[in-house]
Image 1 (tube, rainbow, N blue to C red):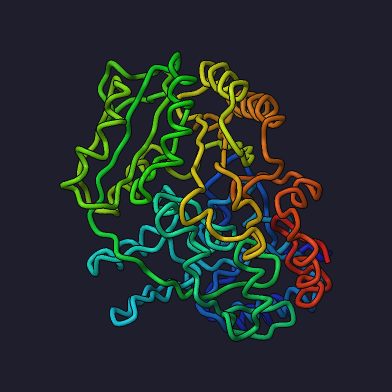
Image 2: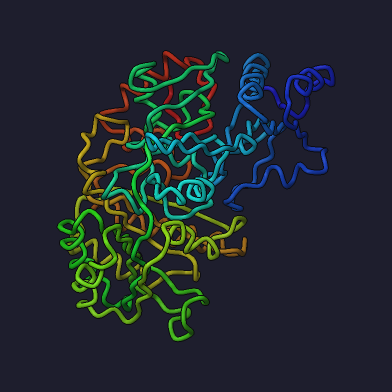
Length: 460
C-alpha cells in the first residue's frame, strides 16, 4: 500500500483538481480536527482526508485510491467503536458533507444523505409525525448504524433500521454508481442490510418512515443489589409486553446532573422505556413496572426526538471508549449473577452495560432475510468502558473485557457488528453465522480485491 501522505506533488494536484470538496494532508492546519472521531481511544493518522461534496467526489476518490493502491477508510458519523472510519497512512473518504433529508409526505418515505446524523433526520421527520427506527443517541451517523443493522427504541414496533430501508445509491470498487433495492441489484441490496461497508460506499438512503410523534418514557432505577431480581422479571415482562412498549436494561452509575444528588456516583440497574401508544393508556401500561418499586423514575410524555437526545449531553465526542458485545437467548441465573458482580464494579461513572430486546417486529424476520443473523436471539448486549481521561483507558478496557468474558459462555455466539471493536475474522464469522458464505460470494463479485477492508471485513 502507498503511504498517501507521501504522494508526489503532481499526484496531489491531480486529486485536488478532481475534488469539489476539500482535500486535507497531514501538514494542513485543519488536519488534526479533520481526523478526529467520536472515540478518542482511536488515534490514527491518515495520509489524505477527502471531505466529499457530492457523489462525484466519492467516485473520484475511490478511483484515485484504487489506481494508486492506497488504503481506504470511509467515515460518515464517525461513531464506530473500533474507529473503522479512520486508517493509518491511507485515505479517509469523509461523507459528512453529503447531507440532506427529504420527506415525501404522500408515501411517507425519506431520502437521506450519507453524511447525516440521526438527530438531523428526526428534526426533519418529526413535524410530519414520522420517524425511522434508529439507535439511542442522536449524534450517531445514519450510514454506519444502518449498514450494521440498527437497534433502537422502535425495534419492537417497527423492526431494525434495515427493515425500513427501501433503497440505496452506492459507489462500487470499480468506481461505478448503482442503485440497489428489491428490484435492482437485489443481492447487493440484501448484503448492505447488515453486512456493513464491505460492498461499496453508500451515498444516499431511502427509508420508509412510520407514524411516531409523542412518546411516553424515560428511565427507572433500582439499586444494583436488585439487578438479579429485576432482570428475571424484565426477561419475562418484555417478551410479553405490547409492541408499543420498548425498554433497554442496563447496569450503570449515575454520573451527576441532571439526576438528583442522592443518586450520584452510585451503581444501579436501570431500564429506559419508550412507549409509542396513546399516552392516556400509559398509567395502565406502566403499572406493572411501578409495581417493581423503582427507587427513582423520570417518566413522562415527550416528543420522540427528546428521548433520542436524552443522553447526548452525557456522551459527547472525544472520550475514551472500549466496546464488547454478544447476543443472548435468555437472562438465566448465572448470567444475572455476573451482571450483579460486574455491575457492582463499574470503574468510571459513564461505563455501562446495555441489553436491547430484539423480539417483536425485529424478531419476526428470518435469520436469512438479511445478513443480520440473530433474529432468533432475545437480546443484543453491549458493554462499554467510557471515560474522558486517557489515563483510565486501561482500567475501562480491563473491566469491559472481564465482564464480557464472564458473560460470553452464556451467549448465543456472535455480536451485533456495530457494537464490536476490531476483533478478528473468527468473531466476524460468528456474528454472520449461516449468512457468511453468501456475503463472501457477493463481496467476491463486487469487491474482489477487497478495496473496502477497513470495516468488520468479509474477505473475498
